[in-house]
Amino acid sequence: MRGVLFIVLAFACVAAMSALGKGAGGVSTAMIVFFQSAVSLGLLLPWALRKGGEPLRTSRTGLHLLRALAGLASQVLMFLAVKRMPLANAVLLANSAPLFIPLVTWAWLRQRSGVVVWLSVLLGFGGVLLILRPSRAMLTDPVALFALAAAACSALALVAVHQLSKTEPAVRLLFYYFLFSSLATAPFAVWQWGSPSARAWLLLGGVGLTMALSQLLIVLAYRHATPERIAPFNYTVVIFSGLIGWIGWHDQPTLLAALGAVLVTAGGALSMTLGGDAAKLHHGSTGDTRHFFQREVAK
Image (cartoon, rainbow, N blue to C red; front, side, top):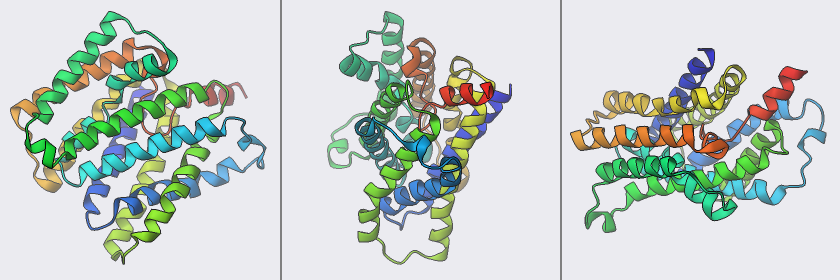
């Protein structure tokens, strides 16, 4: 129950982070994503450097970079979508990575999934179609496809995390993710800097803090429960996003969108439950912490 509580609170923070990004509509997406990574990196550094630089040494820089760029692309696309879509729909589509993970693992790792997993994926994509309601208008304003592309990039990042977590501890995974993301977005953030208002500064700081807090809560969740037990609760982010969108922006989902959300949630939850270790990694943008906590508890 503690694991469930912490993972639900973690995804409440993810919903809040998305809402803060939506609220910072006058701030460039590059600045939002930069502060998301830079604030989290600053909060992580004391923990990462508590034993000097040795724990951060890695021989898998290329895979860390791939994971960071894929995760960064996912965050950029998600924030582009939340600025112009109902919050719940954008967050739901951006968090539908479990639907793409079987495709990524098949293409990259040649790992085959069972029939039930593919049926779960089809169920989830049926829900996606109900939310998107494809039409010619989507060709001129493909914002909903940005959110879906965010999920595809997230799936690639999560499979990369699955490969990295075999040898890399959580502190290293988090450090290189935030470091590479900060470095990649810094030039664009400077280029599009503008003059943020006091309110915008608060929102940017809030994006970074809620990102860091969500990762801390994920850490606590996986200390108390296994991925199989708590992965389906990831989709509570949709409930929180719906409530925030309703209160903050008066978003009211249509019946088709609500049905689509149910199907995506069901398909994603089934895919995570039945899809093996890689699918069960879907708990945010920074990756698996199970191996780290097994070692910490052993100490």
